Image (cartoon, rainbow, N blue to C red):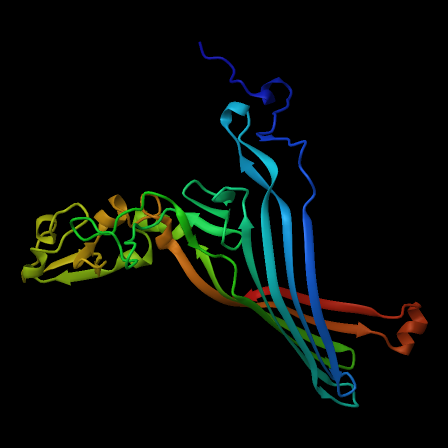
Length: 343
């Protein structure tokens, strides 16, 4: 007979022991830092410039590390890492226009960069931070914190080219490894403000330059054949169709029917991974390594930069002598703000 499932909710609630083991020997993280900077002001403070450079090192960084399942836990917190950072921050502010009638136009750009390195992981090659089974963000010795880690193509040690199968398709590496860096090379921002008689308009842009992201959704769409990239149709001459190979080792002529003119029109494209042209069709995307489920995550890491219209704020400030006398308030600001308006 079927009975009630073993669920604490069926019995008025209960407690579940954490899968992370406590650590009575854990110590506070220690961070040492050296920082220097300057602040310059010109033209009666209408132009200001500041710069800061820093370097720091964190020892005994606390991370969640795996433990043997025989302990009854899956992980424990430990002082497992040593991490160092160095960076630079620059900012400028200037009044482009400043008139006696109260009209002011000011501009304030800024720039920053940070270089991070996981110096030590107490003997481990990498430690899982977050993510999935095949693709994750990890602390990896010698890399920036949060490096993208996952399945990848097998490559030749001498040239870095793909290791190909007998049909000319790339193959899967036996081990996982670093496939990208999600930390941007630099960040920048630009703010500008227009002010006139109690009304001000502030506009803020920010830019993130040169980082890697893993597009897992794209990998799934490739498998289902619903990505725009898989909509391509290619017409292949009969002589080429007799030799071009698919992922399943068939030729185009063996797999598809020719048209009235003897050519073969297929949904797919022709690619060359270094061993001659091959066909990327449904066989490759659904059954081969061209999707995010059976193929390497490396192929869906995208190298990007982006600029965002981060915020626009229109403000009216009530601060007249009449208002102060009537309300006893020094000022009241009424603002209308829009955030993340364009990317």
